[in-house]
Image 1: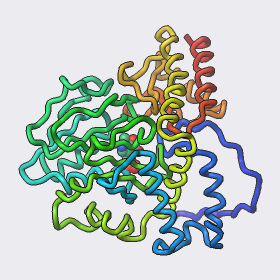
Image 2: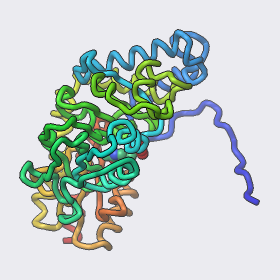
Image 3: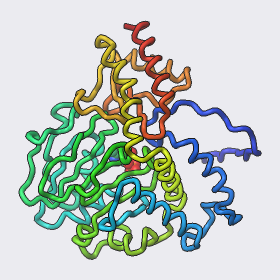
Image 4: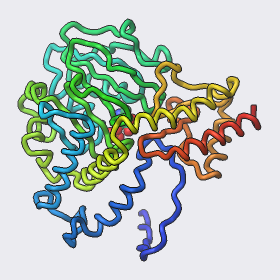
Length: 375
Ligand SMILES: Cc1ncc(COP(=O)(O)O)c(C=O)c1O
């Protein structure tokens, strides 16, 4: 028998300090958003009821949802040709929902495999139909995204699925892969961090926990005419048309996740939108990449330079022992989450939209000193 934990509930107390969290996700949220949430959890819109306690059919939550959608459309310049959905189950549920809807019998879908998350998406898609691995990234240890020449595409593919930013290996596409098939993108780790062309896509999806809010909720942007081509007879929770018709309220929606995404959207707009964030993100990443590039080979990037991610800087020191020492020493200096993913090893600094520039400067300084001492 396991013993239950004893809990003491905190009385109101001064806020504990926050440290630089380089985690790949769940990740840093904007401080302004957390402070607003602290108030709205207690009572939102002066209603005397917290955001998590309101009925999802009531006027307060309807306002939360309406504002979240409107702000999302404003950020991404998303026209009414697209439905904007907030669904449960994270990005992984989309790995299955997409082929369930759009991979018909006898059809093939193209999936370039650029890392762990596309590998998982491929495995799910294979449960429902034929998959063509349009690029085999494992052959180059996932050190780059494919060029047009490296892609082997299927004629009349049902769709092409790609992942814009590879969270683990730290690589990204500069522009979406070119294909005549409807384009579907897993944008979980770089949505709204750089310019994006929604109109080039049939469907974009993103788990929230990197650039949008708490885990568990996914944002789906889906072209309505493409959505209508989905298969019939699906369980309602896997049918995009049913979700769109109910305005993301087919059942009780992930209300707090949607509220938080809405607050993050307001924060993005207040920062000046995607353009301003992209500039800031490029500068933040450069601080760290410059140390890697000027370290005389002490640090080595995992991705090829040409397709480096601005969200996940994945790199190594000369040895596993030094990687371990790096993690221990950064932790002692209030920088957490720098250990690389188990499948790539090494180190990784995840620096999404909300991650502060000061944290990148602090890490860059540490890296320079660490190389000088251990090189
Ligand atoms: C690119 C990418 N896709 C999908 C996922 C899986 O997301 P979720 O945990 O929301 O299912 C992740 C990791 O969180 C990711 O980085």
